[in-house]
Length: 414
Image 1 (cartoon, helix red, strand yellow):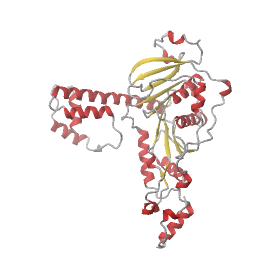
Image 2 (image 1 turned 180 degrees about the vertical axis):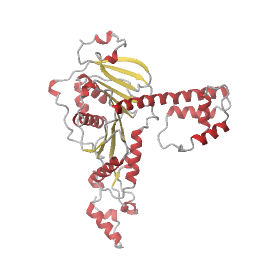
Image 3 (image 1 turned 120 degrees about the vertical axis):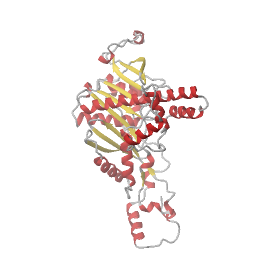
Image 4 (image 1 turned 135 degrees about the horizontal axis):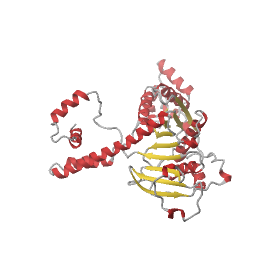
C-alpha cells in the first residue's frame, strides 16, 4: 500500500497531499472491492524490479530515493499509455465503423493442458508418468470471433504456427464475414518475444500481404515485457479453471471438446462466433517467405528493440507529412509493390526503412505443407492409456479388485 501512496504523492497537484492514514481510509471506503494478490504469478518486469529494489535500498539517501521513485512511476505511466493505445484500437475494431481490425494472439501454458486426465492418474504407480503437453493458442479478433487452436506436442510451436494461425484468421474474415481486407488495416498484438511473432518470418508475411494488396496496412505491436498480460490471458485463466474441473480427458479430441465447451460458455458479446480447430501440421512459411521476400531486419528483438513495426506502401495516406530519405531508393528502381517499414520505440518514431519485395509467379500458389514433424522423444500415442484399458481399471477399482504381480506401470507395454 505504501507504493500506491507514493504514486499518489508524486501525481498529486496539491501543495500538501493528504497523509497516509487519510489515504488508507479513502482506499478502504472507495476501493475495498479490489482484490490485489499479495504475490504475482506472472513474470515481473525487470525495470520495475530494479526500481523497486533501488527504492528499498536507498532509504539513507532521500534525494536518490525520490529520483528512483520518479523514474519508477514514469515507467508505470508509460506502460499504461501503451495499454491505452491498445484499448483504443480494440474499441475501433469492435465498432466496425472504421477499417481497422485489431488482433491479439498468445499461447497458453503447456502445463495446464496435459494428457491423460483421469482419477486413476493420482495413484502412486502412475505418479511419475510423463504426460503429453498439448499446445493451445488463442487468436482473438476483436469485434468478430475467437479462434482456439489445439496442436499435438510434436507439432512445432514457432513462427510457422503463428503465421498459419493468422492466415486462417484472415481466411475466416474473408469467407464468414465477407470482408474485403484490401481496404482494412490489421493491427496484431502479441507477446514481446522472438519465438512466435516478433521475428523476420512474421515480418515477411506482413510485408508480403501489404505488397500484394491483400491488406492495406499491417502493424505488429508489442507491449513491454512484464506488462503484456491482457484480455487474452484472462481467457486462458478461465480455460485453465475449466480444464481443472474436467475429470476424464484421454485424447486430443477429448481436449478439443473441453475447449469448445469452455469457449461457448465465455461471455464476450463483441466476439459472438467461436472457432475451435486442431492443427495437425503447418505449411513451410519460412522457406516460402525467405525466397519471396529477400530482406532481413536486424535488431527486431532483445533489449532496446522497437515495440511497433508497421508495414505500408509509400502511396498510403498514413505516410502523409512524413519525410522519407530519397537515398533509400537508390539501390533499386521504384516499384508499386515497395513497402515502407515504420519502426517505433514505444511512442517516439525513430526510423524509416524501405523494403524491396519480389514475388515469383511460380510461387504465387503459396507454401506447401511440411511432411515431417519435429523429432520427439516420446510419441503421443505411447503416452496415452487406451480407453478400454482405463475403463477396465476403473471397473476393477469400483469392484474392489486387488492387483497382484508386478507394478502396473511396468505391466503395460508403452
